[in-house]
Length: 438
Ligand code: UD1
Image 1: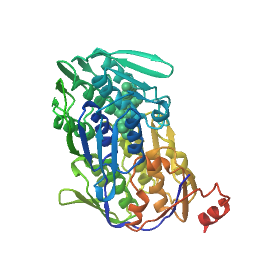
Image 2: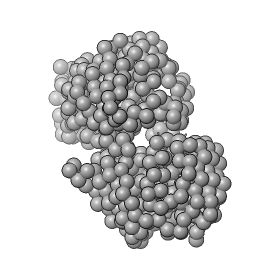
Image 3: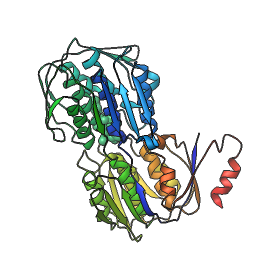
């Protein structure tokens, strides 16, 4: 298992580029199921979840080309033949977003079999709202042998009011509705930019959608969709993580290729902590900090509020701010897995239910720490960038799920970070620990 070795203390200086949004690319790849024609997606991030989705589509009979580098991070997907509309357990268990194929498969094939996702590190994450919506659209749903089976000869339009705001639920039902007979009205929808991105692709494929990006979405079903070419927008969570990296290290960093309008809540919070952020052109932000950070509370909310996917990274910053920061996690229960590891590095954080209280500023010291999920890993990278000495982050496969070559990007702006292969598995544990204390 790969590990990161990070020596803290360097301010980040220079320009760091943001990749395409994983959470847009995933539903957009699933949307390709809705047509027999080719769908070309550009600005696909080179991360593990995308490879998992490629495998998922291929296992159903799709042809998926995925090219990086000079090939513009492009994928070409052809779902001309879908011989097996099943999302198998082996794939679903590693990526819960696999449930995004449910709606498109029923709409296109009249049948979808999706393995039940099971428990998850950051809470239960049920998909009951996806199922409820599909039932309202005329699907019958059966559960057996650990799989959900949804069937409908043709889905019909429906009035769906989400009990709770769900991002992939909104995307899944939107993809189902575009080929349904008649009109679908969806209320209390997620307003995330990723919903807007997949809606833009669907419109380019011939769908009739109004209101994406607001709480109410109206869809007029069409009988057929065609191929399209679409460019995925920048990853706002990767951009936010880099803004925190610039701020926490007392750096002067340009975060390029981002979409500042998607980052308003994050920018506002960082500014309230004393971080200077200025726009440079339309797609870059310059972040500067002299290390005099002030505490400022956050409470995670659906977009346009402060994103739950930035909570762990913000907490790393809060350990370096003067004063007490209250962090309230409203979206997922059990999303404080990074706290134990931050405390092992010297942070003062107490958790009570959905609230964490961070008392800063505490110096952080290097340690061997364990990544538990994608954003928790990002938080530990940020903490290690300011810790005294050399930290070792174990299980970085979590970070590889959603950040493209993060160690190379950070090294490019002055961080001392390197990836190591099976450091402990080959009897090199002592060497690693020596490195840590040196
Ligand atoms: C998406 C993002 C994830 C982000 C999350 C919240 C993708 C691939 N992932 O996850 O990075 O952290 O949004 O911004 O886009 N819920 C139900 N029933 C359902 C669906 C959701 O109760 O059927 C609950 C969840 O348990 C959670 C809340 O609704 O408490 C929000 O979850 P949701 O927006 O669905 O998260 P994801 O779409 O899985």
